[in-house]
Length: 496
Ligand code: ATP
Ligand code: MG
Image (cartoon, rainbow, N blue to C red; front, side, top):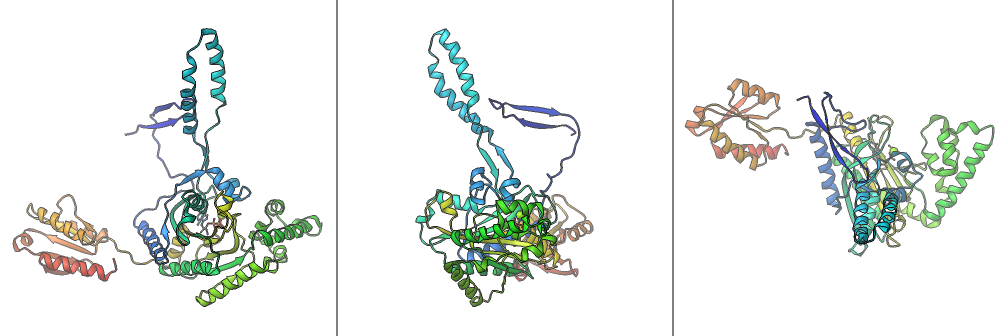
């Protein structure tokens, strides 16, 4: 087949859909910055996500499933219009179907008016086509670059503040940012995130979230992680600190002796978002940044106490951490606690998790006042990369049993026993066609099966099975019950 068809969806007035048949031959590749996660690799992903789910559920977090796209305005408001994410990294499009629906609604309203004299009708039609053209464009939609905004939106939309206790929610899924693809940085990447929303901002909540994160990393074989924490203050004290920082940065910029020390990005951020200057990784900017005033010296009494209590809590829970006064994070909604976890083997993209408090976010999005929040997002792609680079990949269960059968009578027996083994949780491959035993065993080996179950004339007549362990070619003769019990206990023993 060297013909394929392509659907062209036009956003013309009446949304014509035309089918274009093309005859050229071409191959498709995944779009830049996206990738396929193939087996057996995908088993490691599933295992990692499953370990995360189990850990999160043991802390009483429950899953929230969210849409992949939202109104662009939600991200602009929550993440901040000035951030890199919203400013240049979102995949945004107009929803043409909104416009189409508006047009239909408009027609429904207008058609009853058509009962009129001919000259009126002419004028009416001219007005009509002008009004039709003036209908607003479709709504602006964006693929989600992160999910905290969606969680907060859902919390408000479903009145979750009326539910008992704090809402402890987690999500697992893809995010989208138009970044330059490189190792550990993709345009479609995956996050596992958790959020606590409610009336309380006790540091015990922050500490529990951090404890859970480290338990999760330990359980999921992510070794050599470092937790960095900081407090960036509340609306009040941070505002004053940001002004101080801006003045200091302006002095550096305006002094001819130091003017060249800041690159164009930092120069721009002096006005738009001076905190982000602290995030700079440019080597030539480091000496200047190190001398800037530090937020820890400018926290208000309440924020200072919150941070001190958090650190006491971390000690109580024996959580190792480092303070990093420059950890400000790239999103506008953070207040007080911010944190990041780095892992080894990732080069410069070494952050596997970022998070922090966002006490004002729910109110900012039009929700009830006084709702506090804290959360994190783990970058699954990077976590997996780090596990692989450090050689800690766990042995994950693969194919347990390959069934090698010969003879017409062996087939019904094979189908029957395959069903029973599968019901006991074993992965079983029953080839669709008969194969010579030598060839079947060779294939079983290539597929990485642990056992080959041999069913031939002899087995059929004696009512036994021959089970061959492929690692050492050891063979056993077992009746059906013995076989099922033996393989099930092997499966349990291997933790599969
Ligand atoms: P970075 O500084 O690496 O760009 P970030 O501050 O933009 O990260 P967050 O928005 O806090 O990251 O997202 C949390 C985590 O998601 C990051 O620590 C990282 O592990 C992961 N992450 C973010 N962007 C990407 C991406 N483009 N590709 C892969 N993982 C990503
Ligand atoms: Mg980023």
